[in-house]
Image (cartoon, rainbow, N blue to C red; front, side, top):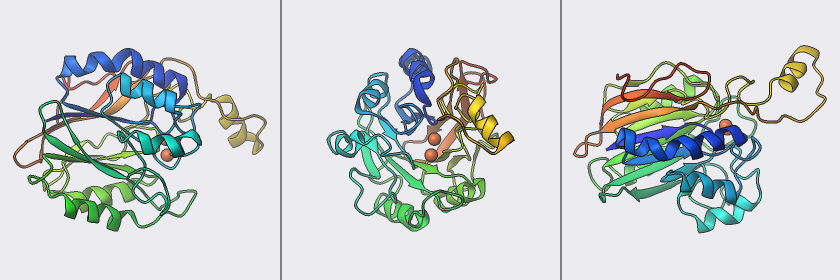
Length: 275
Ligand SMILES: [Fe+2]
Ligand SMILES: [Fe+2]
């Protein structure tokens, strides 16, 4: 199965890149399944139903969220009616929606997608992600009900992400980090067959401070005082993510590469690079 994961869509610039570029990528790269992290798509904070529909209509088969899952309050209701949107498994006990779901691709192959929030350096205390992901993986063994399994590990610390990668090694097809908005250069296939990348990066304008217009974040760092709200940067976005090919029989990764399309970052596609 050929799977594309794209990191946090950031504001209008990120949505525009998704709408303009994602429809073509499915055909160009022969993609079977596309997952997009949408937690910052609406003004940098959360995801409105309209913007969620825009990402799904552009070709995403599944949209994951994150700590900003419900910043846009309409999502609290909308997520119950749109099963293609997942919130973190361990967001809160009473949270609406689901944190894991089994999807089918166009050929009927099953792919399980789940997302967990980390605990290190996060603003709110979330439940233990390792036991939460473990329960999901035990219920869906690779090569059984699921031909592929994708774990989106949404957190700040690369150490916690790497630990999750090894925790899932051999049990998931891929573990990809989100939340920091900066792509890491450690795409690899772990010993047990799981493709791993500490952070997918954002799908947003990199002429920014992690996707926000740089003036206000710089002012806060330099003077220690805020003056305005953060607003997303509006320049051309780079779609940034992780491409993985899996073996349908074992569910393990055969090939993986980071992806960066458009905008300011050095360009990488599945056709130009491989790990
Ligand atoms: Fe984010
Ligand atoms: Fe986040």
